[in-house]
Amino acid sequence: MVKLTDIPKAFVKGITHSWLSMVGAMVVTVTFPFLVGAVLYDTFMHIANPYLSGFIYMILGPGFMGGLLLVFIGLFFARGKEEVRLFTLDYLRDKLSDESGYNRIRKLVFVGVFLTCINLFVVGILAYSGYHYMESDAFCGEVCHVPMTPEFTAYQNSAHSRVGCVDCHIGTGASWFVKSKISGARQLYAVVADTFSRPIKTPVHGLRPARDTCEQCHRPEKFHGDRLVVKDKYLEDENNTHVQTVLLLKIGSAGDLAAESHGIHWHVAPENEIIYKAADWERNIIPEVSQKTANGNKIIYRSGEADEQIAAATNLEERIMDCIDCHNRPSHIYLPADEAINGKILTNNIPTDLPFIKQQAMKVVSIEYRTQDEARTAIAKELTNYYKSNYSDIYSQNRPLVEKAIAGVQAAYVENVFPEMRIQWDTYSSNLGHANYFGCFRCHNDEHESAEGEVISMDCDTCHTILAEDEENPEIIKTLLGGS
Ligand code: HEC
Ligand code: HEC
Ligand code: HEC
Ligand code: HEC
Ligand code: HEC
Image (cartoon, rainbow, N blue to C red; front, side, top):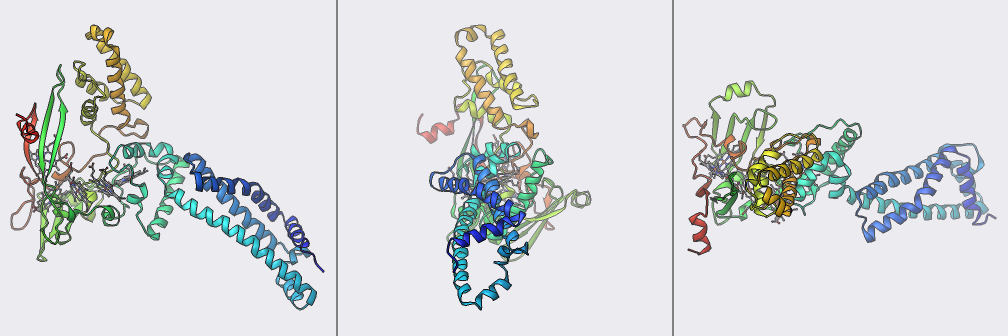
């Protein structure tokens, strides 16, 4: 009669007879306690450190599974020894026809099933936690440290900082998950081999269509009406004069049961499908735009130089217009220098009490530095020197004011410029307007003409009513606030 305790012995013997199994067993034994401890801890307490989670799910986890695999390969494929034959078909046949052996087999199967259950449980938890880990913002944004710092920083400062990277970049469904992991593996290699491009190229041509991502949360057929936009700016004079531009922006709607599509979100109404041809990777040169109208007609607008542009195309592409064609920077918003400095003044991170601070800030941040540290040092040095030599009374009596301004200007710089990734102020352009980049004017430039002679409108009132432009204390604001 075989005792129950013989069975683990047989396993151990079998394992010791195969080098592969030995190695596997050692790996499993060493990783198992750490792994179970770490996974349980992560499940209940949540590990915030992205590198630690990375170690658990990308090194310990696969290590454990690899070890397990080695044990089995060793057991089943290294033949010859009696202990190993335990697991072969011959042996099973022998023992099944023998009364006393039958008992032993049952126990073996029992132990086998028991061990497999434990292993499946651990592997299951691993796969589940690992999946969540790979979907986390920490994995996307922080583990891949150098290349993702700019996107991660800009994302954290945006309205979408609580929306996961994967909600826009992967969305739901298995096929995009797999696709993203394949491209992720390629990217991981690029990081390890240090061959990734600096800056990371945009637009992302493999981006998932917005209807599967943005439109899972936003429904442009549900927004209506106009939106008041107030832009606060500061002039480069001694007083850093505060001026405002006020626009009534015709946000409009993509149409709903009650209202026809109109205004800016007219483009994304299903009945107005807009397809355009772009002649360059950045989609800045648009030779042709076609619009499907509600009654099924098609209007084709072509730019005056459409044929030449298509012939000279570096990356000809046809695309259905969606959210990303205007909102290409919904979460990685890199501001132009002027807007970044104005923003910091508005929030009082840069005090306007310092004469010429806007001008000096613009001057010092417009220089190209090689690293963020170099920029920080230069900003501190230049501003200190300026106020020391030109406004020595302010400098000596109110040094905290200068220190505050320095910190504000440094923040404006490091939130938007990443020389290590070759990202300067204007590297990533936004298509949402037309003040700093081509944006809407890529199509709305009065040069795209249909066969009937209609043009895509550049009329200033198509998209907004300008209520004030760079005015000090504009009347309209007083009116809106009800003051006099
Ligand atoms: C609200 C949606 C959204 C979220 C959330 C988001 N992204 Fe993006 N991301 C985009 C869009 C849109 C683009 C530009 C696509 C284009 O122009 O084709 C982009 C571009 C990128 C690029 C290419 C370089 C660039 O700046 O254009 C990288 C890298 C990137 N995202 C990484 C991330 C990481 C990492 C996170 C999470 C920390 C994240 N994204 C979160 C929408 C998002
Ligand atoms: C997981 C849900 C989710 C997804 C996906 C998503 N958004 Fe958003 N978006 C939000 C939320 C929530 C806000 C409001 C944030 C706030 O105001 O604090 C928002 C705000 C916005 C705003 C207003 C931003 C501002 O500065 O006021 C725009 C524009 C926008 N989203 C566009 C997009 C686009 C384009 C995409 C696709 C690339 C997208 N969103 C994907 C949830 C989402
Ligand atoms: C033709 C360009 C264009 C397209 C296409 C477009 N948008 Fe917009 N969207 C804008 C502009 C411009 C604004 C106003 C931005 C501002 O306030 O500065 C805006 C505002 C928004 C806002 C804020 C609304 C509010 O009331 O403040 C959200 C959310 C938004 N868009 C989501 C989307 C989504 C989702 C899609 C795709 C289905 C989309 N947009 C397609 C240009 C566009
Ligand atoms: C790919 C080309 C393209 C781009 C880019 C584009 N549009 Fe348009 N837009 C069109 C076409 C085509 C029409 C229809 C012709 C027209 O009304 O002039 C149109 C019409 C409009 C209309 C009138 C809609 C109505 O009520 O009838 C508004 C408003 C508008 N666009 C705003 C914008 C804004 C704002 C942007 C930039 C954020 C923008 N468009 C970018 C192609 C484009
Ligand atoms: C196709 C739509 C469209 C047309 C046509 C258009 N604009 Fe705009 N304009 C916009 C959008 C979108 C913004 C950005 C609003 C924002 O940044 O929130 C804008 C912003 C502006 C601003 C404020 C810029 C700033 O940052 O201070 C001014 C000024 C302006 N437009 C003037 C004009 C003038 C003048 C014309 C006529 C030649 C014109 N626009 C035609 C869509 C348009």
